[in-house]
Length: 422
Image (cartoon, rainbow, N blue to C red):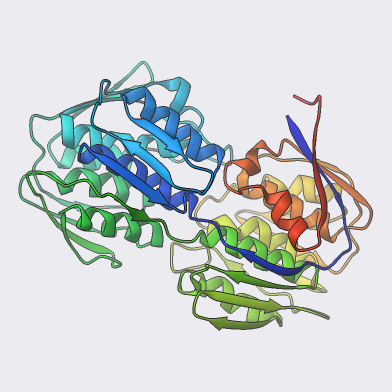
């Protein structure tokens, strides 16, 4: 197990390229089960979550290889299993994405109830209700979802909340269902749009892409795609922009998509940072005092829940009080006790973090609890005086490719070292 050792107090400056989207590629990979063939997904980040999904697909019979250049090769011509066992699914909630493709293409699936991050329950009810609406027989026993359907049939489905995962699974299944499916209150995140566009390129008939109402006319079969281009990772981009702002530095991100970052860019400008957007390049400069600003997380295009933890760290550097309200996962504040170890003044009231910023943070040893919480602790270490050790950085490796190397490129004093801590 590794840890980061960070010497704080240095502004980040320089240029880095934004990696391909973790959340998008995790949705694109299971889509290859819908049409047996050979696929290449470009700009695939080398992450723990990608390898977890790769091992799960390999368990089903898919041949998977990731080149050093970030091209993911998948051969789905020899599916030999329809079971996603607990040993794989427990590591990542997105593993449930194999449910829709297996059910739609092969008429059966056995998928373990998922595991994943520790910041609160994220039930799979919406996934199961969606499959049942499409005509699947579902039962859950001994920790497994058992699903069967001779042929899925189109239906009208309304999601109680705009769940990304449920939207993704319904898109898979409805693409091969008989008849038309109308999905309302669908998630509109860029990762969902990327999947829908891939399915259309494979021959699916989907209208309303990018909106909360999707109309999917099922087709008898889809065609494999030789090459798929992954989208930039908007959460990684937001994290490095916030890191530069927190350290009062300047950063230039290339291969970004600013249209996916509207809510974050607006807030960065609101606190006093200078931004320049030129095509796929985002430049940020932030020096001097910043203004404390309230934030409320919301489904896309609102402020992302996956940026909430990093924003709290940024607000610790603003003199005054700010409030960060979490509406997606109200208990997602596992990073707060660890930030307090660095001297942060943060109170939690219901689903809101009340941050009193302006005090100097002091280096300390802190422990990661989940992916984005880990990022907030690294950012705090970059800001704090002295040395900060961040333990259990395997959480970071789920969603940030070689984060320490990227930060070193920007002048951050951060190294990865092995530790005996378990």
